[in-house]
Image 1 (cartoon, rainbow, N blue to C red):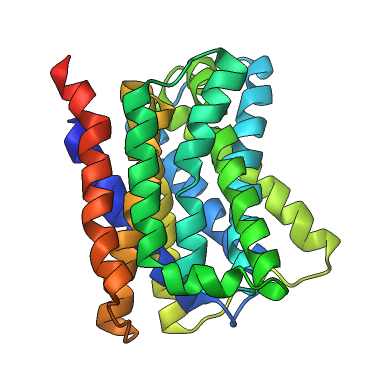
Image 2 (image 1 turned 120 degrees about the vertical axis):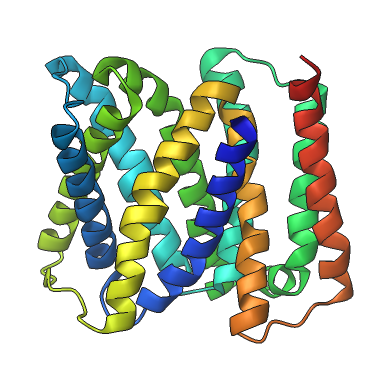
Amino acid sequence: MNALLFGFVVVVWGLTWFAIKLQLGTTPPEVSIFWRFFLSALILWVGLAATGRLRVSPWRGHIWFAALGAALFCLNFLCFYNAEGFVASGVVSVVFSMASAFNVGNQWIFRGVRPTLRVVVGGVIGALGVACLFADQLAAAATGGRAAIGVALALAGAYCFSLGNLASLPATRAAGDLPNAIARAMSWGSAFLALEVAARGLSFAPSMQPVYLGALIYLAAFGSVLGFLAYLALVSRIGPERAAYTTVLSPVIALALSWALEGYHWTQWAVLGAPLILIGNVVIFWRRRAR
């Protein structure tokens, strides 16, 4: 089950980078993200009510729901969408993979969970592999200016994602189960985004272009509802530091789409990077299998 959840998240989230790109330039990022999580929350609320799984949670639990919504369904996506205005989506997906390292650090800082050597080595190998895949774009980003702003925004988004991982466990306990926690957190995230849209005086009307709407449906139903349910279930089963390694592998899917649909050319660095990512994955999960 862990392998199925892991593979599902990698593929679904790997495809979201291209779906996000299809939304850029037609609607302000804040509006696109609002509709993504408003629809996601609606799907979850309807599904929970229809299946009789809707639970009542204590009011104090909303502290964790709001924290999870702000970190995982608001701030990190604001950072990622805006980062792509400064650097290529490939660079953003590479920086997103740093969430695995942030998770290890945050587990140590906030919970006193010292990372094992195997987890650290596997994460470093995998992150090095992703860096090789996008070596040319990372080199361009290192020149500073607008590219540096984009990388900084992407790093902030990855760190917010990591904080959301930490908030997911107490939020799930407060809600009684994972779907109820995510429905409440997505509702809070949508509320925060609505305030952002209103404060900036933007229109809530999204683009009605078929491509935009198709991307929105995919991002809401698959990238958000199914993707986050699977990911946070993985967090509860194998821990945040290992679950976040999905963020190291998902850029490989994004790269394959770029090659097939955007004319990406494989370089010698890319040929080196792909095996390194797979090796890093084996190193991290070998310990898990040995238990």
